[in-house]
Image 1 (cartoon, rainbow, N blue to C red):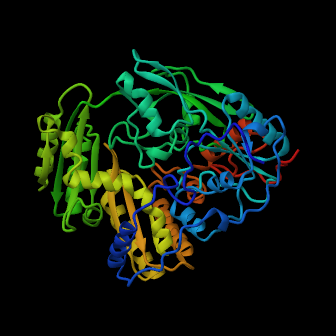
Image 2 (image 1 turned 120 degrees about the horizontal axis):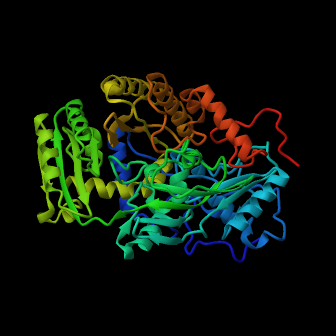
Image 3 (image 1 turned 90 degrees about the vertical axis):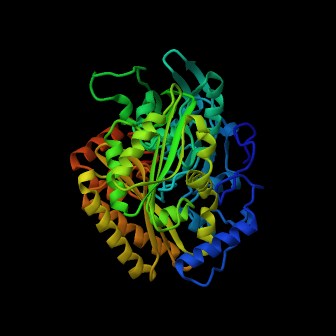
Length: 549
């Protein structure tokens, strides 16, 4: 059954990786990447799997058929079902390259308004079908997988048609925005007003506003406005028991914040359809520097001082020696701090100078510097700053190549307080190094600070290890489990900005207090009594709950 009205894609996306069909990675770049990875892992080379083709994918027949009242914006076409089966994490990529599609969704809905969303949710609720919200499909933690045989059918509700900036309040500097809008379209719509959300995660090009809110995404700012939470003014949410709209306010002391019940809810309670978002003026002034340190922990002390100084840098990415080498920001002998300040109102040179002064107190050496009068924007696109920036934006387009190599390649991020930093980081590095040797015979681990707070950092760890096409998924799971178990035991969080999904759910349950877990379950029962919304996320369905009509 092909839909005639609903599909919103002007261009088809690649179902096996980032980007659009026809935008191919040059073979010379693939070869170069394979060579670099082989050298780093100390292996002779790789037998690269070919990119999967749609006709190689076998899907079971759809188990359900939408009623005539919904059919005009729903489809069971193969491409739509395939592209909505997996996210963009390493585990997803491996499954895709194994051509393993054992549990695809049955129907894809492309609603154009809240009435159509409610109609789909009602249909699912009446029949016990899973209703799975979908923004841009960029989840790396299993954020929208169809559930197993407990449900008679699974319907993915793709919000791509709801992609407009509906209203701009330039006096309060806020905008009412539909949740399905992707990053580039959002910024293009705000640009004529001289405004920006300035929330730019690595997935920016193919992730949505609703997805950022539902997963508590972290974006551009390394300090202060790190998470999307602080940019949300109010939400509108369609739930199985009704539509909820929170009052638009700059702040309130009237009870618990109602928006916080849905920020980070991962579609388990309902579908975020609109949000009033707090905006920023577009950047006019920049000041940047890269500073090198001989010792990673000494540099971390300097970073802590900067984050506790109320300077609030927009960029404060601190890369260890290996990570700096990987991103082309260093030669592998020094850790590198990429420090940047920006403003829509005033020059930032004094802020940068004070940040550099702090770094010098800890032995930091300035490798690159640019201020307002020296075209900091262009300088941020060259040298260490530029190398990191280009690699960071381009890396998602290459992740599938590592899955095709048959190696293990993934990241995990966390956060914990500064008083624990050195001991926790050292223990994590020890355990992960041991796990890589025991499970994969070796490998590489490097880390950086992605986001920072006065009371603690958000370290981001990157893993690469040799494996085989037959064992890569199993080796990944074993290594990832070591990391998650260590984070829980050491008092860190299992995820800082990638959400919980199915990947971290077992560990999340150990992180939160059991009473809070019961609060989440009670909220789920109230808003979604049939337990149809994105099943398996955040809380488990009670045993014995009847989910079919």
